[in-house]
Length: 280
Ligand code: C2E
Ligand code: MG
Ligand code: MG
Ligand code: MG
Image (cartoon, rainbow, N blue to C red; front, top):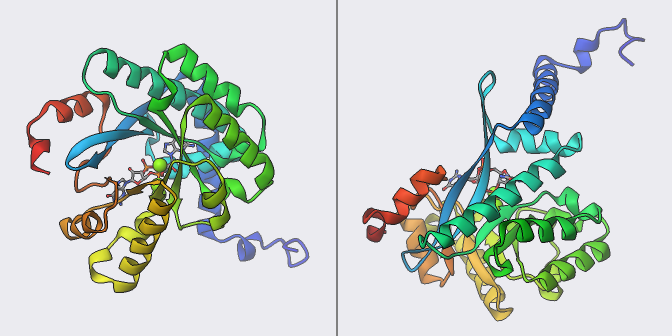
């Protein structure tokens, strides 16, 4: 179309789109190198139950010497588009399992570790062997691994996805639905699939103390989930008032900047050993 109009591409492709496009290409090229040569790190964000660390979530970090810090929200979608996500998640998964096993062996703590998995893996058949391999190589027992998946896995071929989830559960790992309520959720999945946990999306948590409708919704979600014997996590808690509301509602686990930001491995250990955490 742009050619017919005299090649004025700019008309259809404005500056911000161009920047996004170029940024995507730059990230793509750098990402290929990092996947080959290394350069990712895992951070860990604790979750709390009754003031104690009850589990940790592994979150990938990429601080590039040239590009600077690149957020996973920026590079994960690029990695999904160019087919690198398998190798990235394979890396996160294995390192999270190895680290958790190490913490157990050091006697620091014995809690499940959560790893985020892209919905892309559910369109293929390698996921179950991939998880098996991470457990085998790390020696971590399956009940100490939780897989965080988003509702978007159910958009394509829900029957196939259900089959994979059953196989994962048979391995003994736990399944958590991340960003619950944000996506194209069909309650059907939480009713009929062997999942263990839902993580209520941050948008429903933010300012929950000031919004009666949000509070009503979250209270109902928690009641429904408990009726189904699911563990409920609230993510993105930043304010004490939000925490108070969620505690009163009987939310099982709490996570957010109020308690702790995602931490480097050594900071995580320091945090666990410090007395400060007892104040929470
Ligand atoms: P997520 O799994 O929903 O993780 C929660 C995100 O919210 C994290 O961002 C976390 O740092 C941030 N967060 C935690 N508490 C708070 C809070 O109180 N307030 C606010 N504003 N934010 C909070 P992060 O680490 O940038 O990760 C973004 C997303 O990238 C994750 O969302 C997850 O979907 C994805 N991701 C991270 N690591 C991996 C990975 O290894 N593999 C895959 N496939 N995805 C990953
Ligand atoms: Mg998550
Ligand atoms: Mg989430
Ligand atoms: Mg989220």
